[in-house]
Length: 189
Image 1 (spheres, rainbow, N blue to C red):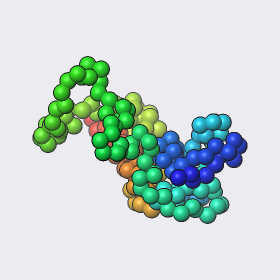
Image 2: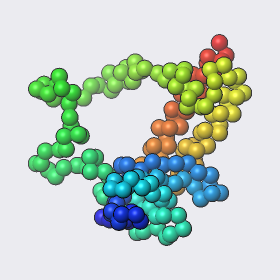
Image 3: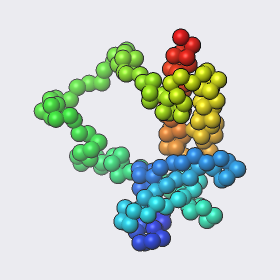
Image 4: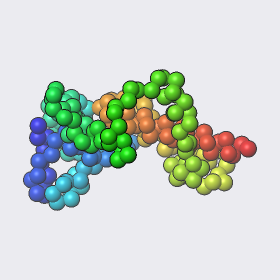
């Protein structure tokens, strides 16, 4: 379903294109809330759109289009293939060494928790980059940086947006919390 056209080259774009390739940018609520930046695949022009929920995006100042069905909001690489048809290669691609291996069953929940616990944590330098502070920043500066950065992606601030944007904001918020906790532990020791 075509949602709009690029004003420069008239190439159509859909809600799936915007969800899959658009970048959500935070903006204060008094300025109109978040924006979505989408780069046209033909002319590379960056289109600025306002998300209105339910897969609806419109240029600033224009009314939102009608709601888009959930299936049409998913990018083509995420959509399910019809029954009996092979799934997209990107969705089911196995690492090269496992190409001929038979499919395995899912690990038990306890193994999944252990794997998650064993996953590498955020590094101190990456945490500093996320919060925009130096490694030697005092605890008060860490807290100020965390509060200002978390306002852009706090779950309460994006509750009115699509589920996809809420999930993205949730991941970003959790990453900021992890960075803050790591740097707080380093500052207190």
